[in-house]
Length: 233
Ligand code: ADP
Ligand code: MG
Image (cartoon, rainbow, N blue to C red; front, side, top):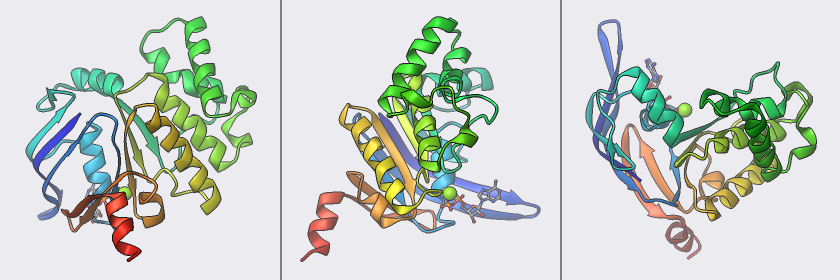
């Protein structure tokens, strides 16, 4: 589903250049649940933004569902983004003046879907995350965990090939974090390919494979069951 090869990224700050990604190689197969783990500043969000076509690498190649992602104009990039990718953020990024149902229906509106069909679909995904009764509530009336569930429903609404989550539990308490990760596990069980960025080992261990990033390089990439087996010896 995802193939990246020798990805490099630097940020220019005045006359200085900060080399953030220093040659990243990895592949993600359809149906995987992978975490990208690393301390703050290790380049996790930079990598996820490139995978999400929100930013471009300076060097290296990226193929998403057999489509080479390179030098696309903004219109094509936006089309691919809407078709292939669903995003989940630490701060939920819901629209505050729209209720839960309308938030979930937003991506469908941009796909040109008719209102009745949008509403049906959005309701279906709200049910899926256990929030059908909250459809007409505003984000300000919901807990952090509920808001993240709405955001997950929104990310699923356009049935993307890949879900990209940047610190999805970063703003949540421990119990709620585990609940959100269990929801993500359930979505993966149904076949969705999911990448979760986190700096928390406990959260990473709720995925199936941990890619460990340090100073812009992958220092470890293994299935979780191997890592856990070793740490319990
Ligand atoms: P992480 O998500 O792992 O915390 P980031 O990818 O956000 O790391 O950032 C990696 C490094 O790049 C950090 O040192 C950060 O300050 C820097 N950085 C991130 N985005 C920008 C930007 N737009 N301009 C300049 N520097 C940036
Ligand atoms: Mg980050």
